[in-house]
Image: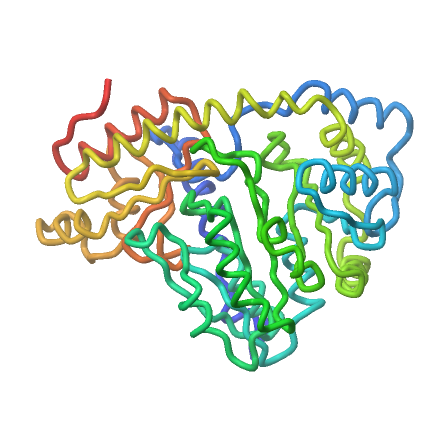
Amino acid sequence: MSLVANRLKVIKPSPTLAVSAKAARLKAEGKDVISMGAGEPDFDTPQFIKDAAIAAIHKGFTKYTAAGGTPSLKKAIIAKFKRENGLDYTEKQILVSSGGKQTSFNMCLALLNPGDEAIIPAPYWVSYPDMAQMADAKPVFVHAGIEQGFKITPLQLKNAITPRSRLIWINSPSNPSGAVYTAEELRAIGDVLRQHPRIVIASDDMYEHILLDGSKFVNILNVCPDLYPQTLVMNGVSKAYAMTGWRIGYCGGPQELIEAMENVQSHSTSNPTSISQYAAEAALTGDQSCIEPMAAAFKERGKFVAEGLNRIPGVKCLQPAGAFYAFPDCREAIRNLHAAGKIPAPTDLALCDYLLAQPQAVAAVPGSAFGAEGYLRISFATSLDNIRKAVERMAAAMGEARVPA
């Protein structure tokens, strides 16, 4: 007799965390490994944010807070939404959680019933399907490969909707592909969703501030404000302020849904860490120029990694428009390596194992973890020197190629 609930039988461990853990273990054993799997900035948290946390400790701000976040942080979030996104929320429409991941998890448990369908554009962030399934809902994947810039079309969305459709995630800029929906593309998707007010739109804006193509950030509510009653806007401080370990995510949306999500949270983690909330408030209300150097560095790195990957035989890589990931199509390279007997199966997982087995190894995450077999997710949230070495190693392992000087 199993001690594990049936719902957990379809849930997989996070592959991104698994790759990072494996790379760390090999490094500890003395292996030369460059890890391109981690989805976190390699920059330190800005000093003024750390100072605010230290001040919170000295002030004794180390107790429980309200389950859904402190009033002062909620006010800072409301001001942020108004200032940067033109969105109006009240405190009862705001929830602070222990990271953006908990925001999505709370939403799934609060929203989805058994048999409901959650529409997930693929490639997708790894946790979306598992969260939906833990709520006894069915993931419905809408695939968009490199040929369409990793962005679904309105017709694809229309064809995916059924009477059971209850949720859709829109993640732009995207983890893992780096794709960014334009205002026109979002407006066209909004035209479809407007016909289905029962479908909640989860706008995952976590990479809002990391735009690499010079465009201005826009989400679906900016172009379709009438969708406000059915949209949950999710964000956090992890990426923009290099605060991944502080674990603060937040969202704004319909009061009924927010209250239900807070109820879920109150019975799981209760409040996010009090000290981290104090630091997040400082991040949102402080000098925002701290974001600019990080965004500029990611732009330079993204250009370099895409150019380098495109020089590897059998690899195609779009220039990422946002976030800090490249998502190269390695299907031809995988076929060639398999035909040459270098990998045992024509899969991205076999390619990742092959790259990690080299004397000078590279750790990457297989695209199949994101619903896109034959691709790799390459994080360039690391130094240019590491990126250069990683691309050189991949080129050496996958075939002769020149890497830009």
